[in-house]
Length: 444
Image 1 (cartoon, helix red, strand yellow):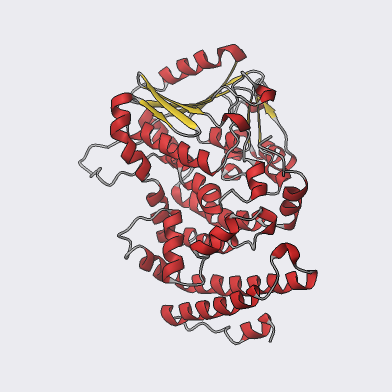
Image 2 (image 1 turned 135 degrees about the vertical axis):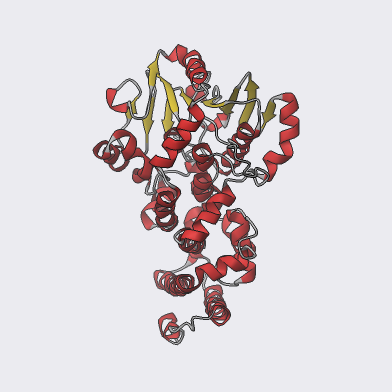
């Protein structure tokens, strides 16, 4: 019996949560048993891969129909009727336990993680379907945004020590309190600050500490001095996604591709939500202005980070680019934000055609507020940070961000992004590039 024939027997979901969840589990168990009979992906014939593709397709269709019918009920189960605030990774773990077959298990994801990207089954696509539905449902999407705006456990644990010392060191990031300035230095130095799971986690913890520390009024992001031979002794802001890690299958869909958008980038725009902050008639500000100082270049995710900041200072010889379309993926929330800053035609040129914007180019003024002598970037950034400490800046940037990117608009975009990016991550053109071009890449 073919997968398509078997699926026709399960077309009709009952509309009741538990029977429909059982239908998903039953179908998934059957598909997994059939997949286990096939060779591993690299050893499959074209016919065998076609069978695997159909098994995945049929299971994903059923999961999507299940979530279309039951997203609010599923989310209520996973959050104890909205009283719990799990992060993305916790949410999918809970879903794997409560609704077997709906998302990959921890063991399945661990097995995938051990494989190169081109050899994976693509189980993260099932996570993409899950988050597409959750983010696309207003109440559940808003709950997820709020949950991800809470401080991480790592930041809360480090806060007392940081409050005393004013310094926090991570594997890829250094944070230092300098007067009322929180200096966040990106230090993934061997790979030109290429973004990976570790940098994403470290940067979110640092952003949390800046927002939690009462002595800091402005956050400043800048790249460290590099050790990579090509740029040794020079500062670099960011080389974008770590292509070598992507080839190796070490870029996480949940923790990186979704997590950075709902984590540190969203926190820079919207601030923190701290449960202990109770309404008292006086606004408790857990938002702060953010400034980026760019040396050399801000590629991909580095440029995306600039779009979340309130001000950007760059060396006149620096450039910005979003090569994601050439790589085959979507550049995060840049497609939502860039057109507002530079205009829709230029945004299309940057995203679709890979155009670089040089800091000194007048057309880059929507990205870069000041283009200065490359030797003056640090001093110019300090002067700009001082201006951002003015008393009314905080209230006004809050209202500007509220007008520019309401949460519901963000969710409309992110729901579709969740699905599209999951699909692109395993699309044939991306897997071909990963296998032929990026095996030895570390960033750019």
